[in-house]
View 1 (cartoon, rainbow, N blue to C red):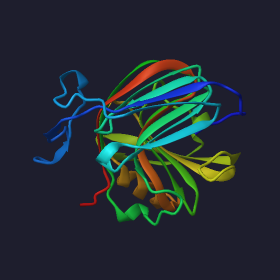
View 2 (tube, rainbow, N blue to C red; view 1 turned 60 degrees about the vertical axis):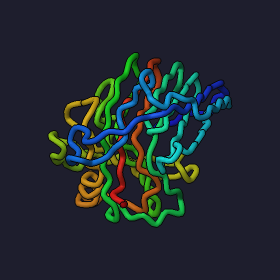
View 3 (tube, rainbow, N blue to C red; view 1 turned 90 degrees about the horizontal axis):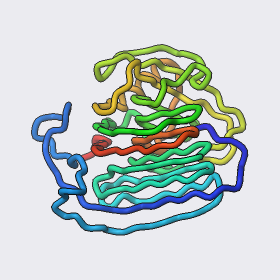
View 4 (cartoon, one colour; view 1 turned 90 degrees about the vertical axis):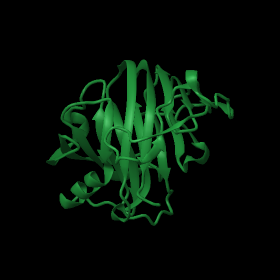
Length: 266
């Protein structure tokens, strides 16, 4: 993610938990597969507030949290402005931003720097539905995000955006492939002495960008990992795999109303 010079700024994170229901067979899922349903707090049978948290801090703050019994971790990272994130028991979340230089919010699997999870060890899949309003600034990405360690790599699978990322952000085109009904273009960019999960480092960024944007569907995350490797783009142990959105400026709101993320473990 892009980050700039540290500035003193005030930002807010509001984490509010609500109930969810369950159903079967999302679009594209196997028949009979039990998954967490699309969130609808207005008609939620549970309808209770589980917990809440508010954090205010200086610029370049990062706040992490567990998402109830989903096994997922959530995180918001922001650089200035006023940013908020509301999450629910099924992992869906709402967010808003105003005046931020960069803000990234995400929910999913987190293993940490001591991870021993190889990219080929598990089959990652994501089913999602979201909507968005407002505008982004210099860039925007929505889809799957994460890092690997040893080697240190930042990766993006971009399925949606406010406007399509340009080559100035993506770097060198490495190839393309078709999966989940469309073609993805693969890029590699180099970050030199930039902030990372391990402090200031030099590392590559990998991008897999869908040709046409969409606000719902299935992402075969592991297919993108395999394509990266086939193009000589090395991956290390998985630090995280999370559904995310990121914006660089602007003002608006984002609402993920459906999220099912699987790592293939039973």
